[in-house]
Length: 309
Image 1 (tube, one colour):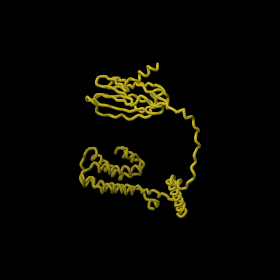
Image 2 (cartoon, one colour; image 1 turned 60 degrees about the horizontal axis):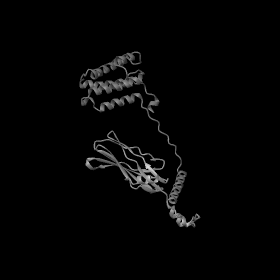
Image 3 (cartoon, rainbow, N blue to C red; image 1 turned 45 degrees about the vertical axis):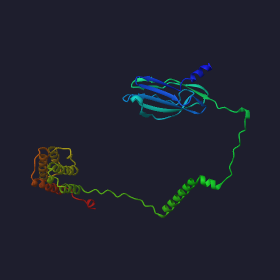
Image 4 (cartoon, rainbow, N blue to C red; image 1 turned 90 degrees about the vertical axis):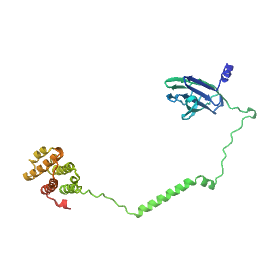
């Protein structure tokens, strides 16, 4: 049977399968390696430019005798006859002597399967000259101690250790000399409701919103400030309520009838501007700010000594 194997070895080291304009090719750079040596296997596929290519999965072993040591990436280039080429290289090795078949690789090109042919790789043993006889294993040779050699070999580690030691000593000295200081975060200062509301109104006035033609934005922001003030002052849902719902809630609050009427006038005018697209006169815009400031100053709770601190 051995002569059949040698006949098989006379076949080419490459094989090509073709389908239409596409074809696949597989080549070995050598058909004979010694045990532990590597052979390079080249996989190539040629296809039209608009075709899709699915490569086979490359396992760690092609069979129980052939191991895949390394796999390159896929290189793409222009081929002949207007075809595109993709090439991939595998490095193979084996630690079993004998004749081992490399299985076909299965490609799918533009939906059609293409398989390479199987190749044959011979793995030979390393020849040993038995005429000289076996030699004893030599003892371990111990080199004499050399301080200069030790310093040359470990200079970076020694310098790094010295630097770390100096840094630790400096840190200890610094901590001993500098007394520990406990940092306390300053308590957040919360302004009284009246001051916060008047500051928001002054900010709105300084931005000159309605003077720039944005009457709706001016009235919306002004009434939002007032509603926020009322919600915190009288504990009613002013920001989520309509004007009618808010006025109804305030009937049972500590807000006086006069101040409730003043507030209603401002809210009604703002609703006309926001929802009915009314265009107020400059005097009405100015009076809105004056009325809002007066309303806050007259209805704000009396300040406590803690608020003035």
